[in-house]
Length: 373
Image 1 (cartoon, rainbow, N blue to C red):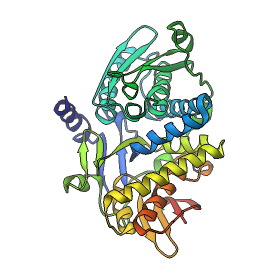
Image 2 (image 1 turned 120 degrees about the vertical axis):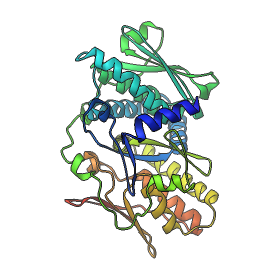
Image 3 (image 1 turned 180 degrees about the horizontal axis):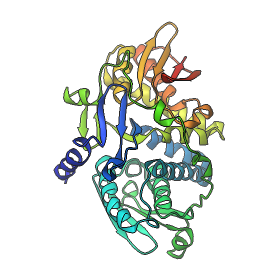
Image 4 (image 1 turned 60 degrees about the horizontal axis):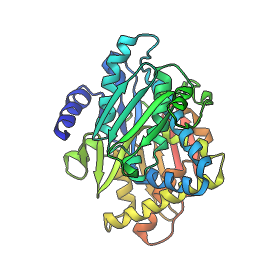
């Protein structure tokens, strides 16, 4: 199974440059190339464990209200990702849609799971997945399982009333994770109680600056691309998943980071949870990577994961990032997750508590830049 997925990923994704991983500071995905279109999207890799813990903490503290927020984030991202990728939809061209469906699911299988099977019915689709990100670890999975799949399926069927449920989950002891997506009333007739999320219009505003801000540029400080770190053996690459020090990093289009943080601006308590799980992960991760110069490690490692061109100043600590992945809602967020990760790593490697609590943002014809301090 693994060899088959690796072979497909190399032939269909890496060789035709559907995904570009050889530029320091940048990771570019262009699934639309398979349809002879050019829609380049800015990707990053983040540790799976942060979102595993984040979902757990949100559900523990907020229960059903937390579940609704997580699901809403996932659905909004799934819908927006499909929108900016210009996925074919079933109403405009069913033949093209069905052909592209197989291709897209295979791509998701190679990056997010060890196996995905699906069954398409007249008014629903059922996915059965093994080792799917996040939910197979915590039994929850609102962000990228039920929520994310609901958003994608709502877009490709052009029906905002589509929702999704997850009656089976490996993280709850089942053999597979099973997600059913269908219109709300259809799912209710199946005997399930889906979360309803209809208000996603705020993510559908066109991003006029996205293409120019995210085009590949020559970095000043970043020297190592993802491909270089894989080829050197520093990182292990398993069909779309990055493994480092037994930590699984997974890939997503940058708007997910913006959407999750924009949604959490509505709740200081939830925002604080995101900071804490990010900081705690960074500190724990630093214990596993051994004695290292925190500046050099962050400047080498995180540009290879797609986060732009990074320079770090000490006394006081300041993280400067040029060509950070841009999205239109940059004005609405404060990059809590990444500030928490960097703060935790620096704290762990230096033995002194460091909290990068402030952020400055700047857009220019040279791209999008951030300063954490």
